[in-house]
Amino acid sequence: MSEAPNAQLPKSVDPNRLAEQNTTLEGVIPLAGLVRFSEAVPGLPEGSECHVKLSFYMDSERRRLVSGEVSAPVILECQRCMNNMQTTLESRFDLGLVLNDEQAQRLPKALEPFPMEDYNADLWAMVEDELLLVLPPFPLHERQDCPASKELEALEPQQATEKPEAKKREDNPFSVLAGLKNTKH
Image (cartoon, rainbow, N blue to C red; front, side, top):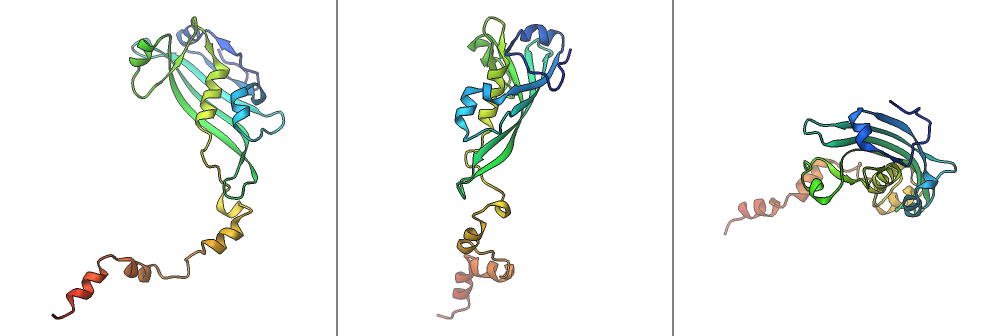
C-alpha cells in the first residue's frame, strides 16, 4: 500500500498494522500545520509543503521500525548578512516505534525511539521533530552568494596571492629552533 506522492499524509496511523504489511506512505504535509516548526523559523514560502516518504516494517526481532525521508522548503536568516535566505531542509532517519521507556532502552543504538500512544503514531509530530532536528544552528548563504561578501573580502582578504610554501616556512614553530642550531655559543 502506498499513498499518492502529492496526497496529504494522515495525522495519525496504526504503525503496527503498517509494519506488519510492510507499507510505504508517500505524500505531503502542509508546513503551516506544523506549529512548533513554523514558530522556529523566520518564514515559510506561501503554501509550502513538506514532502515525506515513510517505510514501515518489522526487523528480524519483530521490532516495529520506520525509515523516513523528508524535504521541506524554508526561509532562514543568514547569520552573516542577517538577510532572509530560502533553502531546503532534508533528512533521512530510522526510528524504532515504542510504547514505553523499557522498549526504548532495548533499541539498538542506531535507532532513535519514537513513542506511540495506544498503538497510534502521530506522523505529523514525527516529521516535525525531524525537521526541527535538521535546522542549522547558524544558517549561512554560500559565501559567493551572500550580500555581505564584499564586506567579508575587506575583513578577510583571500590569501591566494601568497605562495603557500613561503607561508608554511613562516608558520613553522620549529623555525626558531633551526636558527638556534646554527648559532655558535
